[in-house]
Every structure is written in C-alpha cells, then in structure tokens.
Length: 397
Image (cartoon, rainbow, N blue to C red; front, side, top):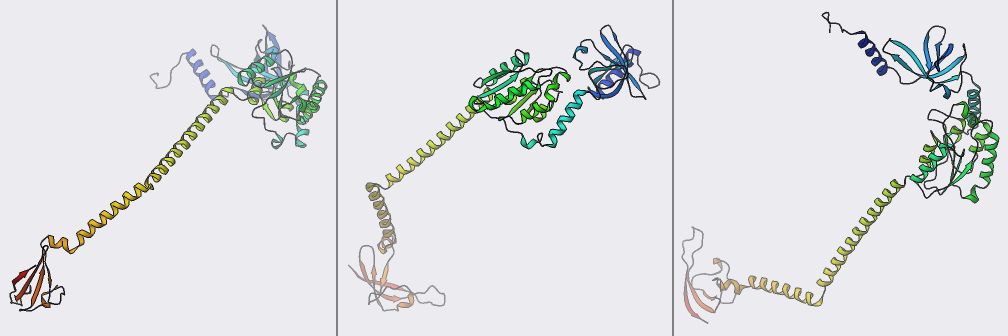
C-alpha cells in the first residue's frame, strides 16, 4: 500500500493482476460472430483482426491448431469463431486465440440446418421415438473405418467392460462423398439383423473437422439410421460436434469410446451387483432356516407338553394344589390353629352372642374332640351391655 492508501504495483504486478482478473472473471471459451480483417501467416501462425464494424480485436490461430481448422478464412469474410482470451502480461496485450473457425453460412451448416429441420418436422428427432438400449447385448454391429484409432479404442473398451459381447465389425468409409455407400451397407445389415442376432449397432468415426463430418449430415443416411431395426448408438467426432445422425440415433455419444461405454455394462459393477444379490439370497435363506428352526422348536416343546406322562403329571400337580387349597379352607385347619366351633342344643352353629342366653347348654368342637358347656353369663363387646360371659365345662369326647 502506498502512503495515500491506494494499491501500489510494479508494471509487471499490474499486468499479472489484470491477467488474473480476466482469467477468473471471463468465460474460458466463447463463440464470437465477426468479420476477418487482414489475415496473414507469420512464422506458421495465422494472425488477423476480428471486427464487427464498431470494434475490433486481434486474433491468432497457432500453427499447431491451423491444420485442424475446417476453413481457411479470407479477408472480409464473416466467420463464427470458437476461442478464448489470451493475455500477454509482458506487454499487456489482449487477443483471441482461435480454437475453431467456420464460415457463417457454410455449406456444411446449411446442410445440417436443412436436414435437421426437415426431419424434425417429420418427428424423426422426437425424444419419444428413441429406443432403449439393451441391458446385456450379446451381438453388436460396429460400423466404422478400418483400421483406425477409434476402432482400437472401441475394441479395447469392449474387452474391458463386457468381453461376453460379440462384435460384428462392418468396415465403412467415413469421409467424403460416401453417403450412398454407407446407406447401402446399412440396408444390407438391416435385412440380416435378425439372422445375425443383432441387439444394437454403433456408427462411429474418430475426430476431425466439422467439414470432415459432413457425410453424417446426409438426409438419406439419417433416414437409414432412423429406420434401422435395432437401436443405434452414434459416436461421431468430438465432444462439441453434433451431426444429424447424432440427432436421429437412439443414443448420441461424444466419442466412439463413449458409445461403447453407453452400450456395454461394466462387468465389475455387474459382478458387485451379483455378489450383493448372492449375499442377500444367503441372508434370506439363513433367516428362513432360523424361522423354521424356531417353529420346529416350538412344535417340539408343544408336543412335549402334550405327552400323556406330562399331562398326567400336570393334572396331578393341579389336584395337589387344589387339595392344599381345600385343606387351607377347611374348618379342621382353623381348629388346628386354636379356633372353636360352638353349637346350640339343636346343633346349629352359634355366630353371635345374641343367639344364646345364660343357662343355655352348648357344645364346643375343638381339633381333637367335643366339650359340653353351660353359659353362665355373656358379655357383649358394646359398653352398654355390662353382662359378663363365662363357660362351665361339663365334659369332653
């Protein structure tokens, strides 16, 4: 910080700060509509300016990128540029690094727009007509150029992911005026799809410029793909390339390798799934066996309880308990504890003092015999009754 409180930089620091700001705040890639101004080759690089009548900005196509361009621009030509910003901190200069460049109204794009619009109006691009890919394909037709790096990648991917699938290699040309040849191959293959046992087909081509992919924008080829009897996966070009065949295919993939990944299951994932199912089945079987063992144990216990010897013993214990209860409730039990049963001369049990008077003869039943007694007096519990009660014993049994 300076003494004024403002940020203080060297020139290099300022330029680096500007570069960092642009790097963080601007899109890493963008599309630019512009007009080419004075393109010229210098040391293998193509330098130019891009303008729109109101402003302009320098642009460059590096020598390593130049052979990959689908179009070599001329002065004053309108173009669509895919690029990113380049900032040289050493001299604070800003330019557009051209990653791709194509004419604004090129034949390729006009063909793509015409065919895609026509097929869309017929419903051939609708999502609802896309067919689901087979879960475990056994036979797959692979249509691509032979030999090619794309084919090598596809074969390697197929062997790694699902070696049980059989690949039927169908060589086709993939560049130039070869649409009729590819369509003929597709028609022959479609007629034999059932006898060959095809589950799906892959139409693939490795990278290249958008112009190189023009054959995959053909109307006849797109219709042949749409009418193919089994699901078709397209793997044409690079991530950013989209052709009419991609729009018509049942599954569009960015690359040929991605097409095989989309079509074939991962054997390791399937193996893990099978192992999980095996574990679940074993757990379920173990649980069912435990339940059966528990049920058998319950029945064994129940049968043991119903054995005649057990039933007799249970009945005997019940009778013993009832006998003990009766003995506890019998009068003899109470007599053993010292209680006495008193009866009048008629043998009626005397429960209250009001049932007898002085001079009455009573019999007393003890645990071990009978006593005869005479009531000489009685003494109620109530304080209002002052009589006293005595018993004179006259004899015993």
